[in-house]
Length: 350
View 1 (tube, one colour):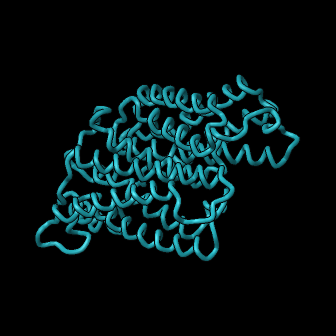
View 2 (cartoon, rainbow, N blue to C red):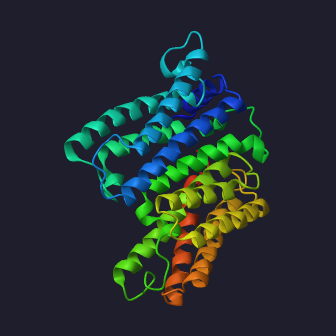
View 3 (tube, rainbow, N blue to C red):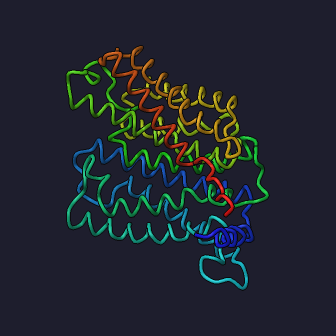
């Protein structure tokens, strides 16, 4: 896309009406209702063996959350349409794709009912790969990320907001991150069995699964922090909210079998918040941004393996667990450079 086209697109987005903090806060409360329904449904798929019907209490919680979110989003979109514009361009910033998300979810919900009727109820990891569930995932992601998208395009928004002012954005990033983590929970490091038997370097399957869990969870936690840091100076509490939300809600799906690791997730979030306050990464400070990409994983996984050692003992050799931390740091650095690449030099005069 040319620079002119990008500028025109940015100006068009900036000209759309903004919703108030309270409107975005209600959107997030209803999105949280929807997410809790997903978590409870996920718990049922993981822990109840005799799911034979679509009509369950957890589906009722899940779909009622969707109906509440959909009704609110469609109401906001209808009463704040911009005169003289048509289609999605007439809708408030951030809420255009939310309307698309409502439609995608509705299609996925109908498909999910038909899928369960024909093929039965999925169990365990099968539920995370069901095509209709992936449609529901796409719709929910568009709904839950609404306040984040709206704030991103707001030229009048504070560059260094307070935590309270930033709360709808933090909550939006958190519930969206939890949703992603839920669909990758077979690689969720903070709910894995963390005893020495699991981290046994002579058990190749456990070793590979443990490594994959660390590296996948690393990217899931780091990506939203770097994305937010590109746009805002993050208030203290941002990382703790995201880490704590992922730890607690994904832990709930697992039945809270490893509470010590959930505490470790919160502690890691607090330390990462402190690190970000020192580094102050931003798009205007690329080196600090890149440093955050490397040092956030160092902090996170140092706490993780310390918790493993404290609670059950590490079954890996020092080379393996320190190597896992090093790989997480390298991948974090690579992600930071990809999100904020070095400036391209201008062409030399001819």
